Amino acid sequence: MMIEFKNVSKNYLTKENEYPVLNNISLRIEKGEYVLITGKSGSGKSTLLNILTGVDTLTTGEVTVDSARITSFNEAEMTRWRGEHIGIVFQFFQLIPTLSVLENLLLPMDLMNKIPKEERITRAKALLEIVGLSLHAKKLPTALSGGQQQRVAIARSLANDVDMIIADEPTGNLDSKNAELVFDLLEKLNKSGKTIIMVTHEREPVKGASRKIVIKDGMINENYLLEGGANHG
View 1: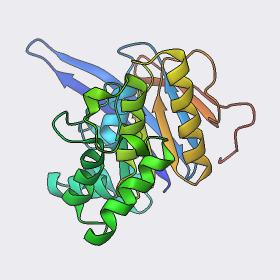
View 2: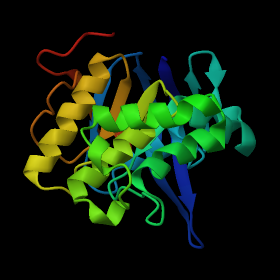
View 3: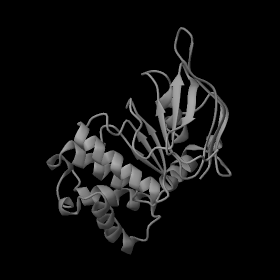
């Protein structure tokens, strides 16, 4: 899925004035890319992702994914589109603590009804196998380490066979060893054809990433290919 931001701006209104967060950003991300978005806190990088996922609305401009102008969707249309096409991985996992690991993976399938009902348990178990946690299917998330919970969250993001994964600081709450496991997993998913867009504070290039975009003061400050990254234009 080709993603295009066209002249996207976002302003937040306060009682006193209007506060610009994104300033006329135009950007294209090709299908199958692994893109890192970096920048200081408050630079606008997470807002950019939130507009793509429909969590936030833009002030001016538009975002298209393939032929779909997603910024014109109503709330119900956006919820449906997001559930079918985007898997989201958060810094703090956001697993449901009262559900088992397996049930956390089944929930998005049950909500979307994209995966046939008779295939859901088999698919959930297969995803846990991919992230190396098949032996923990019946445990509650709180019984797992932070790194294990994040791998469950990545498996959950894949539940509905999505086209892209949006990861917002997915290793920000992990030690270096577990962060490396998460990076390895995301690299494998990208090689399998998934588009990966990740907000990160990592100073060093992330293994497998193809491009780095630096946001500064709501604008694209740098946009360049990483060594070994595929050129998608």
